[in-house]
Length: 170
Image (cartoon, rainbow, N blue to C red; front, side, top):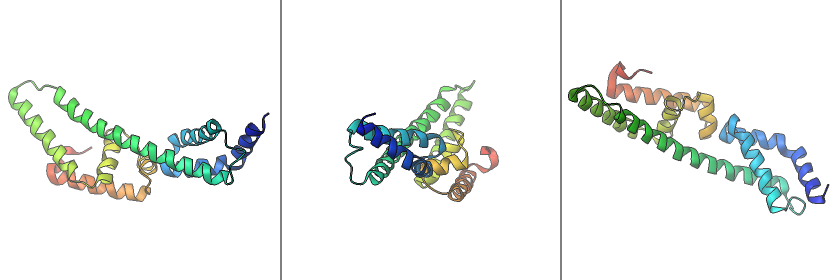
């Protein structure tokens, strides 16, 4: 085993568990393993494991950056999911022109209603309703507490009910 590989193996044994917990708090349980592996892969590709003055700090900074990248990508996927939701709702053609007009108006109302929510609140609502994530998964992905997600969901449902009444119950 080369000195670089030995240094990387030692870093992995010393910090992998703690780094995994750090990543899990930032991106959720499912994506944490990918963030940790990518952090070590980054270190391996740079070949600097044996020469770093503070390898733990470097690993945690890399993991934090990867978590930010993941959150950005998640927001983009969420935006595309919302657009797909809009397109999918428009693609189902009702049987008559009145129903089509009514469906388009309801979709516009929903879109307007959701656009008035704070961004994190709207993201939490869409992650739950479109992607089917639990409150804990959403909290991990957005980097907030489960209690905050609970509040966001209550606020979002109250907001939607204010526009639709009970006709839009999930």
